Amino acid sequence: MALNDKTAVVTGAVMGIGRAITEILLRNGAKVALLDVNETAGKDLMEVLEKQYGRERTLFLNCNVESEEQIKAAFKKVADAFGGIDILCNNAGILNESMWEKTVSINLMGVIRGTYLALEHMSKLSGGRGGVIVNTASMAGVGPLPSCPVYTATKHGVVGFTRAMAVTRAASTASGYGIRFNALCPGFVQTDLLSTIPAKLGKFCHLADMTNQLVEKIGTLTVSDVAECFLELVTDETKNGEALLFFPQGKQYVTFPSLI
Ligand SMILES: NC(=O)C1=CN([C@@H]2O[C@H](COP(=O)(O)OP(=O)(O)OC[C@H]3O[C@@H](n4cnc5c(N)ncnc54)[C@H](O)[C@@H]3O)[C@@H](O)[C@H]2O)C=CC1
Ligand SMILES: CC/C=C\C[C@H](O)/C=C/C=C\C=C\C=C\C(=O)[C@@H](O)C/C=C\CCC(=O)O
Image (cartoon, rainbow, N blue to C red):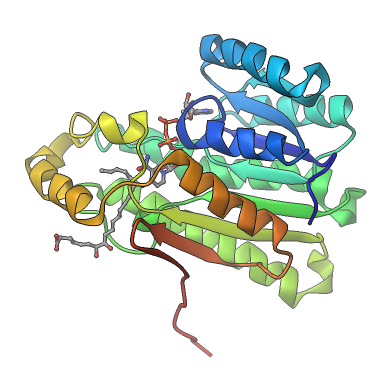
């Protein structure tokens, strides 16, 4: 899939991994709508990106993925401004074991909300052009992250949701969305989310050392490493229902047990 003149939406686009994904999309010719709750940083980033990539290619929208209304309004603005949506990256996420309901609401429900509302614009069944949805899960979507059971649960949920949506597409003409669904599963990445650990571990803060040892053992990725893997999932049209696991030592498409 060539990205030239495609329209992409990235949630949690202003900082960390979302920003790197936004920039790789722009470098490859896409127009990008940046959805985020951080309005100040979002507007500053827009100024930088407009200078670098041109005025008509980016749009910042203040949008909390916990709000169906805000996502709906944002997607409509993107479709009106850019003439449709081809790519969605449900990337916004937090790690906060104390605020576990909010963690579920953003990390898992935010992905489901974003996906269902995007279908209205992207699905060929509702007049869209089809495309690809990439959800930012985590290595913690494949194996348990010590000290973060709720975060782990949300990321396992994102992987399961992504794979089920992909099977739906493959298994039924009634779900002929024309959309591929894939999940990114990076190990530890150098961002604010990682640097604010252990303050976010809540009742599991006594396991902070174990988590730090795991970070040291596995090492850390850069946001650019993640953006490169994102690009692979977007552009390779053979990829649907994949969970791409990667950390400094390597990268693999996860194989799950065959149940039938
Ligand atoms: N940093 C890491 O080690 C890893 C992070 N991830 C995942 O990558 C994604 C991005 O994480 P990072 O870039 O590390 O985090 P970050 O904290 O650096 O950036 C997160 C961005 O999301 C925005 N955001 C937060 N809540 C939001 C909401 N309710 N609605 C809209 N935007 C919101 C923030 O304002 C910020 O711009 C998350 O889903 C995270 O779980 C996955 C694997 C590793
Ligand atoms: C601290 C959280 C920071 C970032 C969250 C982000 O999403 C990154 C997650 C990265 C790693 C996930 C790790 C998954 C680990 C496993 O699969 C486990 O099997 C390891 C279990 C125990 C390790 C204890 C040990 O033997 O050292």
